[in-house]
Length: 289
Image (cartoon, rainbow, N blue to C red; front, side):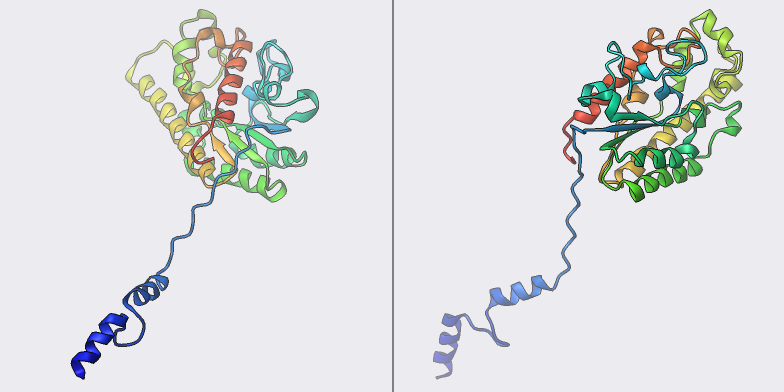
C-alpha cells in the first residue's frame, strides 16, 4: 500500500506541503522584486511653436552690423530666408510662433529668468544655447565653477518644468572656443579686435605659443568640455530634453562662418550652419526617443 501510494503521488504530481513543483516555483518567483520599467523619452520632431534662450549667439550679435543684435538672422528664431533658421524649418509661421528671449552677455546664471519668460508663451519647444560667456572671462580664474554651472542649469530646467511641464528642451553644446582661436588668429583684423578685450581667457595674446598661454587656453578648453558634460548629464534626467551630442562643439567651423566685425560671433553663414545642425539633431530618430 505504501508503494502504491507513492506511485499515485508521483503520477498526480503532488509533493509534500501541497501544490505541484511548477506552482511552488511560480510562488517563489512572484515574491521576488521586479525592476521598474525604464520610462520612455518623449520627443516630438514637429513642434508648433518655439522659444529660444541663451546668449549673444542666439541674438545674432555682430552678424549684420557692429555691436548690435540682429535677431532676423538668429539660428533659432530668425526670419531671413538665407539663414533658414530652425523656426523657418519647423514652423508654419516663424514670425508669430517663435520668440527670442536670449540676451547678449548672458551666462548660465541668467537661464532661470529666461526660462520663466519663455514658459509664459507655453511653447512646444525651448532651445538653449548658453555657456560660452561662462568660459569667456577676463581671466581663467573668473570662469564659472562647474558646480555653479550645474546648479544654474538645473534651476533653469526646474523653472521651466514648474510652469511649462510639457515643453520640449533642445540643448546645444557650448562651442569649442579653442577652435575659434585657431581660426580667428589667422586674420590680422581679428587679432586687433580681440585685443580690445573679447574673451581674454582664451583670446589674449593670440599669437603667443609660450607655455603659460598654451596652458591657459587648455584650461578654457577643459572647462568647456566639463560644461558640456554637465549639459548632457542633466538633460538626460529630463524625459523631454534632448542634448545635441556635442554637435556644435565638434563642428569644424571656418573663418567664413565668423563675424567680420569681431571674428568671434557667427556670421550669417555661421548662423545658417548652426540652424542646420540643430534641425538635424531635433528631427533625428534616436533609439531613446
